[in-house]
Length: 271
Image 1 (spheres, rainbow, N blue to C red):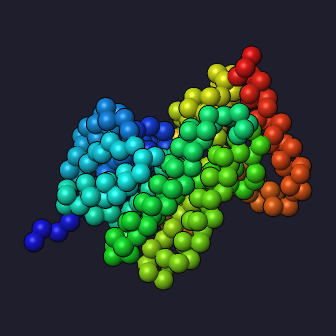
Image 2 (image 1 turned 90 degrees about the vertical axis):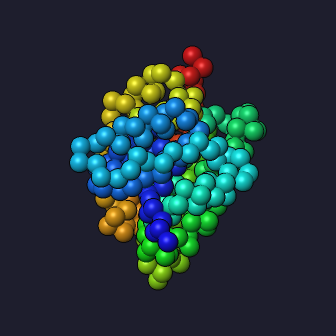
């Protein structure tokens, strides 16, 4: 009987941190499975990784699934099984945010955010947990520095990332005795397609790009933290400062500051 193809599975792999994690992991010798909605982008990335210098692995598997849809995680697991693959490292990277007051936003978009950022991440973690345990593997969930505070002006997004952080930290304790490390990545703003999807203004996007860590930098830090078995990875000094100080600040002050920041982003967008 042929042994299963042991893979690192990365969701949201068509761009941003997910794509750069795939590039970095492939360079470290990992065999990959890539998941996103954009099939053309996935195929282009898979073709790129298949011809890396020194590459010994087969071309990465590519699956175009919309993980906001019920049944998609189970369908992905079935597709991997049909391909003769098992997951030894799972990276739950897919997610998005939306700028603006929750009560004024499109309800379907916000519920879709919950479906992707929380439900799909949880379902994939649970579905592949047996394979991760068998491989004594690793799980990386992409949260955010906003997980440490409430976020008026992006309320659902901030709350979803707080869930990811809490879930990941608890799961790390549950799975540690089974040989699986669980890591929550909590980056600050990273210039990717996130800003356009969240409807940040061009001016705000430019400001983020001028001072933030790049997606390849964050991907490298995330990979190294995951492989070191860290429970939480905070790329950059500012994210560490925010994570350490947020619990100490009065919540009313934190919410006022965050709300003011989001309002300025929205005013620039409207203008």
